[in-house]
Image (tube, rainbow over all chains, first blue to last red; front, side, top):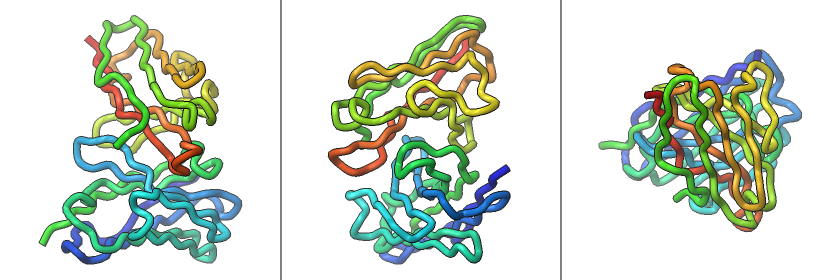
Length: 118
Length: 110
């Protein structure tokens, strides 16, 4: 059974960089796409982007200038960096396995609340 | 801002059937497969339906999906108290080159 776990700081100061890592266990990161999705408190889901295990990426145009994703196949991990954060970036961040470049996600991490506050 | 529109809430008594609509456009639902997710309070979304009408292993056949032109529908038959959750549709938008989700629908079992 594939499991995903997000990790990183739960509190980030405004204008700084949010950094999260997703560790995949129970399966290989190879041959799949991996997505990041976020959900502001009390609101709906927003797709941030995906990365293929080979490093190809596709980002949400609304966040593209601030987002960088990377993958480390040796550690079975992929990561998200979001720069110049504001309070509007406060959300639960989910990592998920994407079955086809933005098609659908079959396995999700439990989610991690990241709060942007000074 | 979601490009897929869902009703904010639907409700029905136990054992009844509810349907949730997801309205989009020719560049998203009209051009791509639709998926549906169930989000129980305080938990991560769970895949219910993919490729418009397919169920992952372990999802009961009480849940079914369909698509017509630029709209999709999730039906839940034999409603149970454990079905109380938020439900989201999702797809790809070919024009925006972005994954998109619906506005979400809260299902209440009366």
